[in-house]
Length: 211
Image 1 (spheres, rainbow, N blue to C red):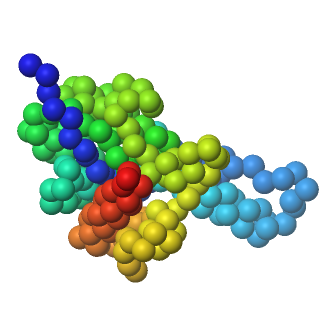
Image 2 (image 1 turned 60 degrees about the vertical axis):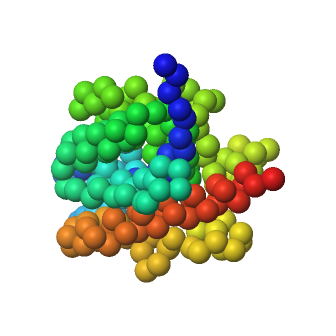
């Protein structure tokens, strides 16, 4: 029997995982001779590595995921254990007994690859089977749809919401602060921020498809 397709609005938050880089292995430019200047250079490069690690699927980890099915309530899982988070998310959406149109902001380049990689790593076969098989089917990326003729456009969700008269999801926290909140154990606030993104994405999506 053919399964229904429901809309799955979702968002993830990520933090850096284990960084296998020794600061002593970093090389300063050959013209640097001052010890303090070399140390400052290595500190700066190490910080750059840490900052990027939270955005690379293979060096980061998902710490929070929020989702809503159609017009349903937004749900969230925030955890320091990524595998636990993935399995709980897999169980939750699998119970819907349907396929999904995956809807989110910048999901083609960020969220979906992250989830796919983890469905493979943790042998989450049911989750993997529910993911889109290509970038042409059952995906609605609001960032892409805001500028369908400009594939290079990178509109922020908060900017689009403000312009469209939708409540901005950024309320005291944005993506750049998630790592700090995570390190401080402020998991509830991360979960709320992630859920607010889902609410904003849903409102933006409904506005974009309105005829």
